[in-house]
Length: 467
Image (spheres, helix red, strand yellow):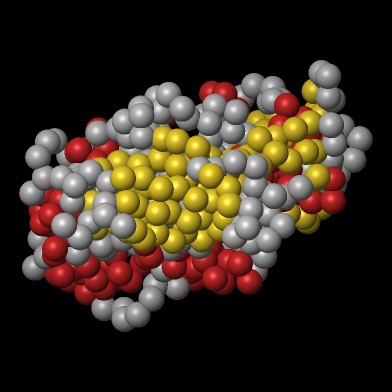
């Protein structure tokens, strides 16, 4: 059977898929293979902050033999000097990149400090006139389980890495420095994957995007049986490994669940931040994630909180793709700006972002939950606010996404100065089977005269109630 031959062509490899097998990193870093086309050469752009900008089109590589994948890249540097490092994002479109970049206050602060901007396109090809390319890539992936054909696995992370190569090829305009990437959804997932393979990248701030390798993502049958037993209509993203769920398409092509499990387990270490967290920390990479509490892509908070409590998160209550947020949501949150400014200009900051706190819980007396949240000494957190839900549906299920944290289920925590920790006590509902909770903590930091209000969350925690 042809499908089985193709399976053998990829899945015969044992162990972990290597970065070299997936990306050909030597080629990714080679500027001679960019085949750059100059759309707009370097030119001065006037404004309250004068800059120099350039727009090019680059060859990311071939999705398959004879099928190039090209994207535009806009580069912005200060008008009077080279940029040292840059902020990178794929959150644009070919049409928008044709126009000179209009700078927001954060981008102006980065450029004033000598940090450049590099913007490219990490979007579905169908959104800019290449729908057939996207369809053919999916068809080839379903038939072969070769991640090179899957745009989420190869093309988008490779786009960001090739944009770095393109910028550093402009030696008169960029010198090597820090490279911090940010974005949401596909533009949160893609840099989170790219940073695992490209040590030129030094920081990532990602929202509403995958972080860890939960059982649903690894196609565990018990987890999938539970998900599929839940009422309601499940979307095409929840349950997916690293984006839209591809299980049905792969099974329809002749594979079995064991093939899905083999594929997801083999590639996961090259996809998820959590699998590489310790090595990234040793490399000096800085990270902050905003998964949302009700997101169709970051749909596995309960599992992640239990298994990866060390990963720095901010959990905006009732947020996610298409969600409006809780009435008490921290509307003054400016984490991204503070994170990037701290990364590029640590010596210019007054204060540093909060680290993830430790959380402990116990049931004291009859039906009373006690929660203790502790930061390292000297963290200087300013507040504590706790949020909770009873009997939340399983990760990824329709009710998990649609049933919001009730408006009344949030209160300020008490700071116990003697013990140096935040305390919350609440009488539990004797009819509930479990309770989920997390807390958010504020800290204000400054960059010169500008203040930034930041928040960090305790790990998302589920407590099974003993009655």
